[in-house]
Length: 241
Image (cartoon, rainbow, N blue to C red; front, side):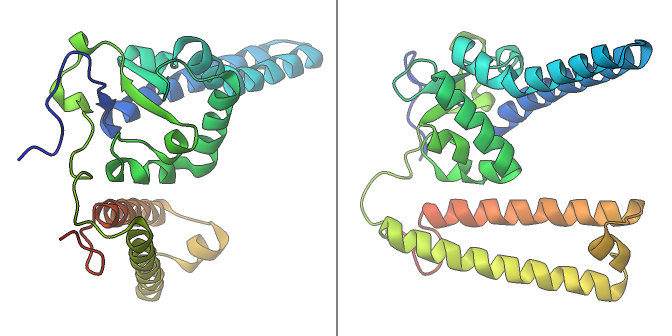
């Protein structure tokens, strides 16, 4: 049985994480190009004042780029190039204040904001939930099925434990995961796979960085899985009947 509703022409299509990741990569590429271009220009001008003004302008552009474009156009250039749009719950664009708040929340939470996507009906990250917004396909005619989901059905029906119970059980599992993560790091340190200099003093070699990156990715995947299973009522202690 399908867990999402049948697709109809007027039904919202909520972007998958892979699609949103592509949009963020394009925006990041633009930001890097702007920064390096400004750095090259600043290094070739003889005026310190002009270099400072240029630097301030770049910082201002980077801070306002997403909030202004989401407010005025429903998304950044990355969103537009990947056929995505940020939509307020009332169907329009977010106000500037909500767009700015969304950007600040996403910046503060980082990748952890996206852990909630698979545990929500409309594939919302935490910064989407808190600003009452979703990221949808802009033009359904240009999209393929692998780029979006429709509203999830597994959250319908009776038999699920209360939200409070699911939240409590999920938090308990998350706490256990964090303890196991700490124990795993301790084991990596004791076996020499991860150096003490890297862990305590941030003096990491190439091997340390790879180990640290893999451990962080695995932690994110585990946390995302626990949150998803917990909210869907699939964890032992708060299972859907």
